Length: 368
Image (cartoon, rainbow, N blue to C red):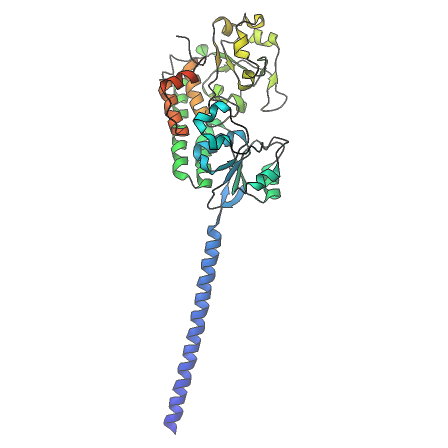
């Protein structure tokens, strides 16, 4: 009898131990499953700090991007054009051979500073991420993000931060290797040009007028985002006027330009529309200006995007090489044709021919 009780007791204890073990195993498995679910959920997003200091939660994997600033449209194209699904501006028809039909035909949505920006059109594209510049005016990034429930990151328009722009966008888009390649190229180029132009004596610095507007009587002052290329290469911006609005073109008089008497005139993107370059040499109002008399009015290379400005994009990296060599050929001794080819191959993955380089530099190079 005692043996039976002992056996039953042992059997009971074993059952209890087994039951407790099962409970612990179940709890452990449940916890592991919950942890994995949490980890998987967390892996879908990550937090980044954009270039204006905003903390933004973005998808870990970004496949579709919309650009709502002109400079970011260009920068994103050079990083990975296949991820762009919406643009801020319509590219020039002549740019098609450089950019391809797919990019040229992407929907144009406007910019954060454009009153015509259509939120509904952005939503239809279902982007994973929206990118804009740090110069929001009409539509702040936080407002866009709140209304569309799509993360928005801002990047700098500062020329000397181009490398950081590529590093940041590379992180956001999962294009770290490509971002590093373009960042390294940008940093190396800027450092090299700065080291060359710092040797230029003050009395050798060239006075430059940046002609904008249809008649060339608008301009941007030194320190403006639109004149950073000129500032970096140590050109002396003759415009010493106050702007009504930061980043805007200021109107000037013919008398002011005559008094400044620049050594060189650069035709801005907005002046092209008014055929400024075509008319300046035959217009008597401009005839007594040194740059005109010396035939040193230059067009700015602008295909597929402008080397100097509008938009103030990463293409300014080749812009600083072009302008430094143009203004100071004795101090900045570059084979500019080769540098342009290298830039296009690296940033656009396009191999320029000699004839294409010649076309780009038509009326944009020293008369030899």
